[in-house]
Structure formats: structure tokens, C-alpha cells
Length: 245
Image (cartoon, rainbow, N blue to C red):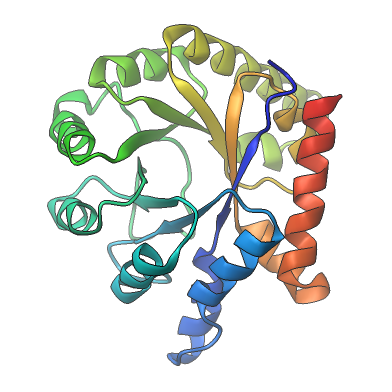
């Protein structure tokens, strides 16, 4: 199992963040998506937030039309976002928590606590042919709830692991390992992401049950210094090296 290729989804949100700082058309996140694919990305992730602070409705429409790899639309479970997702029918939809005041997604979705509210969204997206994913913390209770909702995929939040160091980081890594193995045993397709960098990606990529990592902010930051394609190629190399070890 450990030699199975680990897919890389590149999140282009923060190309749009830079664009929106001036309120003009550049840099273009759709162009960034094309470069990411050329560099080896297996998919493109974009989060359409309710406040449209980075990715726009037009971005999603264009990406849906031009991408040659799967589009993973991250969104909150709201009627407005559901309508947009059903209009474009992206390959995948990842339901994430969203608070207006947060700088970035701060943790996983409380699937267990919001089961009844989330169920209609999961059902509608699945019936439309979208691969539904739930962004959750590495917790067995949340994984059990994901199964009961009928979502085929979960993405484990790696943000806490990336922000820690020393023994606490190793403890969080072990928590992610246990949760990944547990979710896999339940029949879920297991993904992970948030905050991953060159320094933190390899221990996560070594987890054999993981099928996909979604990485964005770090890659866009590295692109300032080394270019987007070079940064993605290096991330791809580290992931492949970890998976083959």
C-alpha cells in the first residue's frame, strides 16, 4: 500500500488573495492552476468563501470550464454554496467550517454535532455526482459521523501538527496516523491538508492509507522566491520520496 502514488491537490486561493488586494485582474488564479497542473498537480482546490475574500464566482466558473484535472471545491454548508456547486458539478466538494472573522480555516467541521444539518447537503451533492469530502479533525467520533452521513471521503486537518514542535508535534502526528488508519478501516478514502510545508510534509506523506494531500498557502509563498512550478515540483518530489521510503 505504501508505494501507491499520493495525489497532490494544489490550492490556488492565495493567488486570488494577492489579486484582490488591488481589486484588479492580476495575478490570475486560473493561470496559476494551469502552471500547477504542468508542474505535476493531480487536482486543483479552490475555496469559495461566503465573503469572497479570495476566490470569486467567476474563478469557479472558469476553472470548471478549462481544467484538465479534477476541481475540488471547498465550501461551507449553506444553501447559496450548494446552489453554486450543483450548477457547476465539480469533481469533488469538500465541506469545511467557516467563520467570517477567521483568517483561515481554524479546525475541522463538527460532523458529529451537525449531523442532521449536514445530511441534506451531503445527499444533494452525492446525487449530483460530486465526490463529497468532509474536512475534520483527526478524531474517531468525527470519522464515525462521516460514515453515517454517507460521505465517501474525509480530509484530516493537519494545521495543529504543522504549528507544533517537539514532543507535542509527534503526539499530534500519531493522532493523525491513528485516525487515518481508523477511517481507512471504516471504508473512507482518507485525505489530509492545511499548513503543510517542505519541513512537515514527509511524515504525513508516509502514512500509507492517505490518498491525497491538499497544499496551498506554503506553495504560493514559496512561489515568490522560486516560482510556482519549481515549488510544486519540489513538494511533489518530497511526497514521492516519503511514499517510496
